[in-house]
Image (cartoon, rainbow, N blue to C red; front, side, top):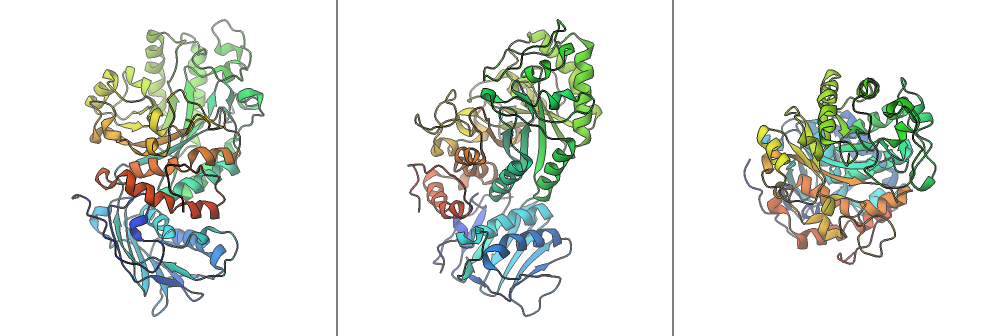
Length: 504
């Protein structure tokens, strides 16, 4: 595909340029001639581009108040064009080409996902006030230039832990809309843990109705019905986001074991737990009931999850002996395949024989790991989420009112300055499927809390997943990040004003 070219800047009549985009594009050339939106501007949808054109119209109408009709043809009109096909072959499945001149805007891609990612760049080239929900009386210019862009890694994710604290479907959808701005294409939902069970399983109904009542620190719980979960998945899909559901096992299972006594080796239900200790719970590995339970959960969850992955946890199973851990996954791994899904789980699962299609998720802090290196040699790919860089629940500083610090303090620069291909010897570029920014919610209770911990760090992890490594450097990024602040203010995002950034 060739090395990324330099981002060439020239004077532009707006405060924004194509070289300011986050994530940084592969190629970007700024030009002085901006495109002006007017009440007569139309959005032309080429064949197959109707959904993305309607999405773009929905983004632009509230603040402009312009009609912006979606039309199949627009001869002689002020036009934003969306076309499938006719794009540079290098853009692949998610990339795009964007050209903005004084007379027209043209966005091209090979797929609707590529058009969607291009729209996220296009919205950053408009004034920040475009994010307002009410009409703003002002001029609307789109910064001129050309962009040719495509992702470094196929998977760029965010994880939301809804088990420690529950978040409603509306809150999850809100987070989806926030993360897609930075070309995140995967939402990992951590649906079960010691503190609560968050998804309806019809064959084990009390998991949700009783196991879902609790949350960390005794806060109120909650759960998703299967219909609510399917609605979240469909909403995510409309934004080209794949939902990866996770049921943690064989540890982190106290919520289930507190309501179904038969999941315990002694046949006695354990008390509910709302503290945030880890490593004490384990399913009864030798019991046939365990595998009936696990298969029922996998079967029902697979049936309502169109994405290819199903998360089976595997972390911090300190109460499960190594031999039992291996025996458990030897029985469980084939179940996932039986119901048409591919295994993903925390990197501890690499200790056991897995199909090469399985995708372990690395959460440690870098360094040698023989199990991961061996799995990579066999052909497994990894999602990289180093806790000391990518965990959004780590405190920024000692005085941060939310979060934890067991992996250290993670300021904005710490979240940005790492390379997924250089964390673990033996797990290089070809063995990395992508990156993910997990947000554990032991101390997170509200959407404002989510926003404070995710922004601005999520944007940095997103850039790591999308942009060429050669295009990334801290000084350039911090200048571009500063220009996102007015956009977040317009969106009413409760972001952390890091002293490392000269906010505009």
